[in-house]
Image 1: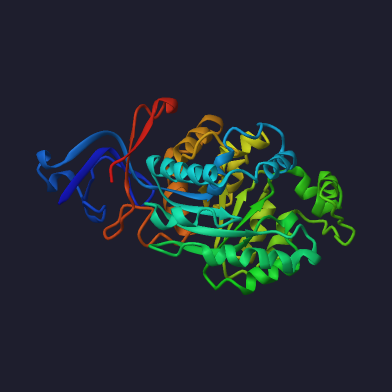
Image 2 (image 1 turned 120 degrees about the vertical axis):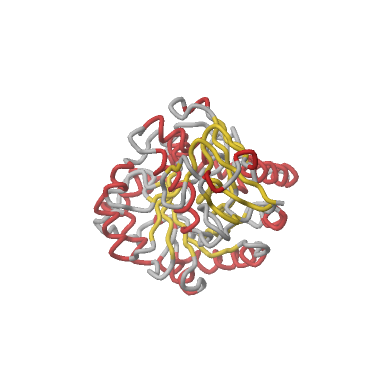
Length: 390
């Protein structure tokens, strides 16, 4: 069966809107053609009010934390937030499993087609086998900058990786949690146990204390580690921001997604571009507001022509799992960014970051990107809705 869809605006593969396009697809969502209106009889086309765009790519999520929705207070700052997360890790497995299932279904309903998902456990492996979504699982490792913990950390995460799904289009890789939690020894393991071209994800510059630790060797992270009985006596500040430690210890032949980037500067972006051209910057605006009540300066990334993607983070630090809600938040607080650009972040940029751009991220013949209908007044974003057509 063949379907023909059109709308007031179609978000095209060149990142612009067209008002004269017809998307032709089969029942499985494969794009068979993209034509102009005059090539078809009007009665054969399903014409909709609003915008059609490809399915969204969520480049940063913690699906396994879905059971923690509404458990952690907002506005605490990152360090207190992390401390609170740890206290909710032990909970009945049935509750965890149901929350994971619900989170996966919520993302599907909200038009997400692929997810870069952080996993510290194997709890999400089953749902990824049966999901309608594609998952790039990032098995996230941390040894808290303690070389004495590196071997036990590796032993802990090997079975997590082994159990992760590779069915359908799913992928997986070892990744570092953040500069402030990964020793050079653990970075070396990650480098050696991924292959060229894989995607790496790392949390980056989410709070001022992170840069303070690396630049000056002081700040709240010292007390944070002390609370867990760990010392940083061996740690030597670099006088540079934390992202420099990350790029000095990661191989440059991986695609790398830096996540959050709330305090990232033009100099940081320039340094990473010089190190590796395959860099992506995942923004999770609702999580940033939930935890630190602060957004990145997106103009910094636009001026650097950096490739930005969008993530939801987890239900621990968000009210929902919806890329459209993230776009609405950006438009609310930094409305100078054109919607076409935000849709580029949410679709093809994300697909490229996760290496799913061969079939997702844009309306192109042969791809199966999903088709979303955005209805309502775009100038009144709170009144808009997302519906999955295919």
